[in-house]
Length: 397
Image (tube, rainbow, N blue to C red; front, top):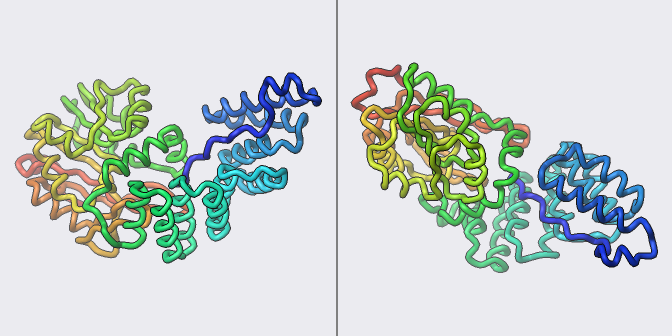
């Protein structure tokens, strides 16, 4: 996922300066840009295009205005226009980390990965202490097939940002060395706090389908009965919430990211939410849930054995676990930390971890989780039960 746009610093005079300005156009431009920035934060992209056109009428060489126009066109997927507009902004003398980061994002969308890496590199030279810029450059370099350069960029990032959890995790993912058993709490919290405000829109653009998949299999597995207590494990912004709410008497959510949870709470469909690591939360709730759902969550865990044991202990005797996970095709029994920073799992590993925990794989189906850079991301949709209740459901597929 590309880094959200860095906030744009104004390059026009302050309002007090505008009142004294020689040009009568400066004050209205500033007001238009203030409104445009507010609308941009609310993702009202279509509404601000006319406002920005007006501002450009007053100040056609405003670097800030051209920057905003370029960002809006990128959000509207008009990336060729976005690139040209951002290049025009640079020619006005506007050369900030934000504009080169945005240019890199546009070039990534255009599949110009080497050029994107170069744009992010300029942003890094301007602001070498911002780890997100290195993360973006690394994704571009990996898409360009330049793994060695990506590893070198991450080592440079550690020099400027020592101890950053995201940089450390990405270095392990790219190099294949010092791979942890799971993504650290700090990594997960930092990534998703940063991403929370644009999470839903971004996943919609990737044709993300995990919530629909887990809700459909839950409805089928419950076979007309209402779950008493449902846990949305790793609930994020609550995308699964509206689909799970009709299936149970009580719906709870847990996630590590406070900013993601704020969005989940705003949906109004959870009876309770908690900011906690999933494994620790499960350990505190033995035999509590008759349905646990996790959509694209277990990709932040390596070996699933301990997590599945905790899931089994948190289930009611007739409980169900439904989840999606990224598929590792190269090794049926393996686990691999991918360059994306997510873990992929083989089918046999899922089955073995479930058996060790006293869970039975009722279904394990191949699905497409989302699309990235025009290609499908393959995964599995799984339904697990305790061995003692497996006979009432259909066998694995």
